[in-house]
Amino acid sequence: MQIDRCICTQQTFGELLVRAHVDGLSLDQLIDDTRAGTACTMCRPYVCRAYRTGATVFHEVLNYDDEPAPTADDSTVVRRLPGG
Ligand code: FES
Image (cartoon, rainbow, N blue to C red; front, side, top):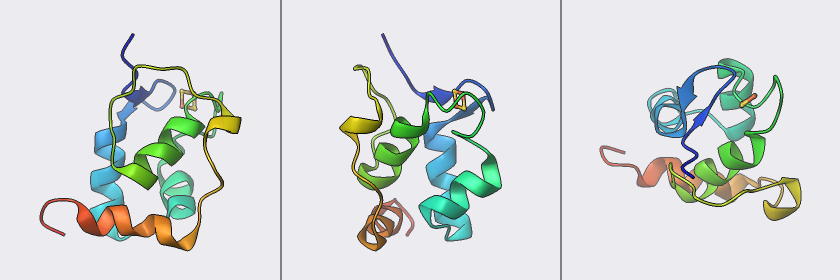
């Protein structure tokens, strides 16, 4: 099993991280702007983990209990992306 995107909005987690990087978005801003994680919400833990860690492909099922609430420090992953 490979999980790499928000199915509802057809955006990969990689695309979301690039968007966050280019536009300098916080996690909340990224979710608000792209709507990723706002329809069925099944991908929300993955969007949060992608933002927090920079991982864009997952092979395990995540739920809300697996992912801590985002903090201000989570923005550091955006600055670590190539070209950042
Ligand atoms: S899969 Fe992302 S909101 Fe449904």
